[in-house]
Image (cartoon, rainbow, N blue to C red):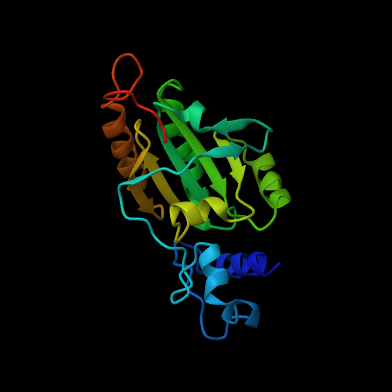
Length: 211
C-alpha cells in the first residue's frame, strides 16, 4: 500500500506542473512518503535522497521486456528481437503527452512492423482512466498500463513524457523528455539512425537480439 501511495503522490506532483518534471517531493509531502525507510525506496528504484527514480546512463541494455497490452496481447523480448523499439512513457493527465499523440501515431505507422515497434506505457493512477481516455482517442500504438511502476523504475523515468529508442541489438541508445514542436523530428532522426543499421535481411549488424 505504501508503494502505491508513493507512486501516486509523485505522479500527482508531475501532473500539477503539466509538463515533463522530475519526481521531486517537497518537505510538506505526506508522511507515508517522507517517512519511508531508504531500503523501501530503493526497492522501488527510487533514490532515497532525491526521491526520484534512479536515471540510467546511455547506452544501457534494455531489461527483459514482457508487456500485457490493454487489448490482451502479450509482447515479449522475442517479439521485439531485431527491431528498433520506441517506448513512450506517458499519462493521460499530462498535457505534452496528449499533444504528442497525433504525431506519435504518424511515426508509428511510418515504418514496417518487421523492423519497428512502438509501445506506450501509461503512468495513470487507474487502468479504467486510461481505457476511458483511449475510447475517445483511439490509437494503433500498443498500450500498456504500468500500474506497479515497474517499467518506470527499470528505465529510470524521471518525467513525462519520456521516450526511449532501443536498437536492434537491445541497447537503449536514445532518450528524450517532454514534447515540443521539434520533438517529433528529433525522435524520427533517432529512429531512422537505428533503422539504417538494420541489414536487408531484417537483422541488426550481426546476430541482433533484444537482450
